[in-house]
Image (cartoon, rainbow, N blue to C red; front, top):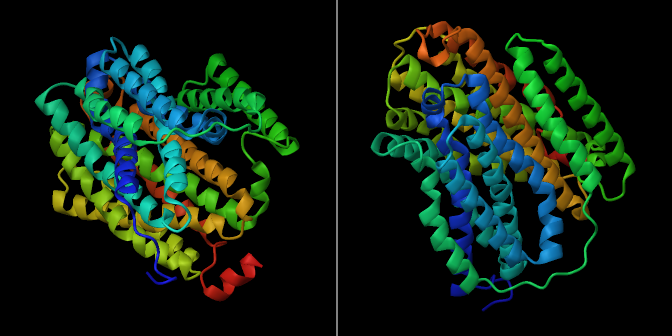
Length: 469
């Protein structure tokens, strides 16, 4: 073997990568599989969209909160131990969600599921990085990237098929057989890591950040719905105060939960703004799209899931192109093109015609997906290019949280705006096409706004070199 030839991937490494990919697939699938069940939840529990949106938002919130803890937990308890605990907690949450008896219990159990799901992928990536070594980590990580591409495509389709064939409970129960395969394989095949001393977790930062996000989303939901009650104002005020306190604490602390000092880098700051807006656009729209097909067009959950699949396919096909542009110093070209395509793709949906061609709608969603693939991943990649290598772990946590917060706010606001336009009977009443048309202006607007921070990202190799220096 020549010196420049990378070492092969042994069977053990491939098997462990397969186990990690299996666990990661469950959590990614679960982010989108619930989208086609929203109408079913509303009818089953008799709840408004403003309440039901918390079934999706609670999961995203839990994912965002737990990500900063994974690096500390892996050091403190060992990679294998963290992986096993994460999988177990996710499966427990899935079981409880499937057994939920009310919308309140379902929301609580989604938090449990999200706390486990948020740690699965980072814990698995850390394990693979250790097992594969520096010379093979790129190829191994690309294997784990497959579920990240398949999840958004298969989630709505699988969810729709399960609801049509069985019931909404199986949207969550489907995780159990997959997890019961992954757990024993993980126990047998993954070597036990050695826990090592690490920095103390920023408990104060966690206690400030988590409640602030929950209070702000709850207050914003009620405010957009047109109900500025004293409770709503109080939640917004309390959330804002806690968030300001967290920012002050994070900027002063040496071991803060999130390293906000990274925002001092203009390219990192611009990439995060792109992530917030594009995450709100795509994830928020994925909440509304299945409802459009089910409520306005009268389709089954399965058909609704199939009709949203072009978006995921478009994203999967364009991600590699976007990554290539970033490596060539043209991240700005990728993100600007992607944001324009996302906005253009939603133009068809702001047309209030209730009988728009499915071919046209599917082509439009494909364009949205291509735009998302050119926007989200390239923006994240561009954020790393001017940072010191030692800042990478904290930058990764911050980027992931910012994107999830964007999706969290997008889901909450889009759901409440749709609810406000549906009328007092919500999904159970007569639905006007204009309600969805009004709501789809929001993802279009978010994509258009992403053009502004994208202008900061390098559009040529020369510009990339000057930014890096």
